[in-house]
Length: 353
Ligand SMILES: NC(=O)c1ccc[n+]([C@@H]2O[C@H](COP(=O)([O-])OP(=O)(O)OC[C@H]3O[C@@H](n4cnc5c(N)ncnc54)[C@H](O)[C@@H]3O)[C@@H](O)[C@H]2O)c1
Image (cartoon, rainbow, N blue to C red; front, side, top):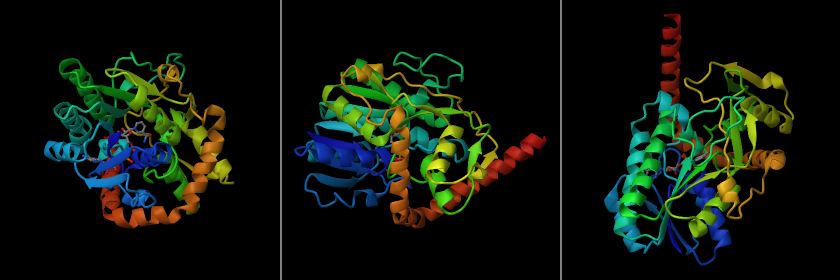
């Protein structure tokens, strides 16, 4: 398999590439990434000299670059992780780039897959496209749950997913869409909740919990996600959607308390802050369809504490990785922090009337 991994310098893409190189000695992998603030080639220091791995800097909204790399590298399969992914940025920082990359970018990959007759394309998407469930709702998201996103990030992802369906039906592009729940593990950009909290706690700071802390997310270890995607690249049926999740629903407060307990810290380190606007209450994924193909998570619900402990250890042992990232991306992070502060001030002014 000659596999093009779009967005392979981000969190899940990096873990996926490491997994594939370990598991499939005869696959060749091309990592195609724009290197936005979230892309980090340091994640691939250990494989950059591997003859089976190559990096090409490029943007998935640029069809010519996509066509060139697919043709030159004789790509047979594509998997897409490239996206703007930070929900808070899609709310406070403007969401133009979200729509461009998450919707238009997917359409460009579909065109490249069609023109170059790629054998299979897996578009990695999110359970957030289904919208929100109430805490006491007994239903879970299945593949036939209507798509009804609430966040600009999720709406832009849903645009890409709908394009996949349209290209399968209209042009017979052999595409699969996945809807995965929240991932945790190594190499996650430290603006996302788990590494963000770990680094704040390591610095002696408090951690901000939105609202009442009872919003529920369904957590999956990134390695289990990588294993599921590898299976779908091989055995997934084109035109189908697959949910991926580890049956591991936890409230944000429960997650925070678990992190504090593992790090030997008390609940006095929690600071409750104003809730995120439109904050989805609960996500819950029914992953029965991919389980029927033979996949099960190695880090199931009862293994969550082990997975979280290993993850905390990884960030503690790789604090230099994060330090380099902060230094390189400081301008970008400061700009975003300013826009957050501005919108907090605006919201406070609006609340005062
Ligand atoms: N992180 C999660 O919990 C989670 C859960 C479910 C689904 N997903 C989906 O998985 C995918 C990967 O998520 P992640 O957390 O690894 O994201 P990330 O933000 O860590 O990485 C995104 C990567 O995409 C690259 N990129 C962005 N725009 C690009 C463009 N126009 N062209 C080429 N590359 C571009 C970035 O440089 C970065 O390397 C996303 O599609 C996301 O929606 C993530």
